[in-house]
Length: 308
Ligand code: AGV
Ligand code: CA
Image (cartoon, rainbow, N blue to C red; front, side, top):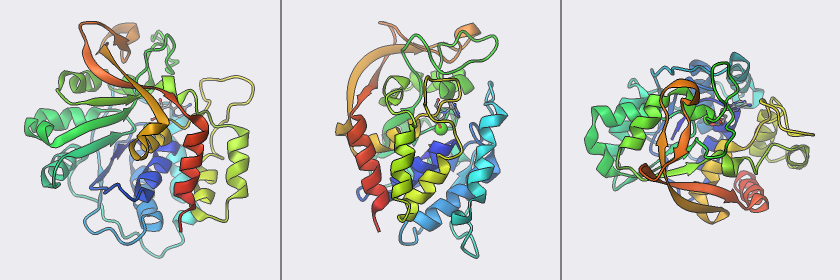
């Protein structure tokens, strides 16, 4: 997994750790929607606290990638709050090690070392994958697919920035060239796009349900993460929070929660539409997750978090 330190990225990591059939072989963090240091530390603490038995060989790698279009600081700051949660700081020491390799090199090593093919889960920009493919083209044959939270084919994305036309999704917009580089590869891409994530907003009802279940410490943690961000009340704003990355993780564990169709697309790298993923007959095929069983998703999430 490669994530970018947003509030829902941490919850996605926690869910992957809780899935009985998933063997997590590497975690890396890119400083995009969160700041790098707190996001790395919080990830290590989440693995320690919620990862079950000690996980031999699992370390957390720092990315040294930088994006062309930075995330708003008001969103990134949340990574400091999560890292400071008492529930992540009860232990005397942090045990999960930090890798001495940057994320793209860490990814290359993990994929080469793994038995069989690896599934990549990216819940932030694709920059580290783009760099890994550039440095080590051989890994492509060892990757089963990339499951990516990002992109949209809706007329309206979620970027509201001066000099942009609003058609892009943020993870694609952060590094348009990196996104396009992954599009140029032969990898299978499963895209958990805004089409499906728009169906899972953070609601007051979801918060209430987690509050009722807070005796399960993983659900208490999730409730705290979602206390920091604005829910959907009357209408969506640019800050409204959705369970973007959590749906992405859930799709990996339980694919029948969603509907998928294959479309052809290109990525815009320049100008006012940069970062836009766009339908185009001449483009490469991607599997678009465009619909989700909302209640089934929340039930699956709760079931994983209730364990132990
Ligand atoms: O575009 C969704 C991606 C997801 O990977 N991120 C947040 C999720 O981690 C960026 C983002 C879009 N809108 C946001 C975002 C918002 N209102 N607050 C924080 N991050
Ligand atoms: Ca994210």
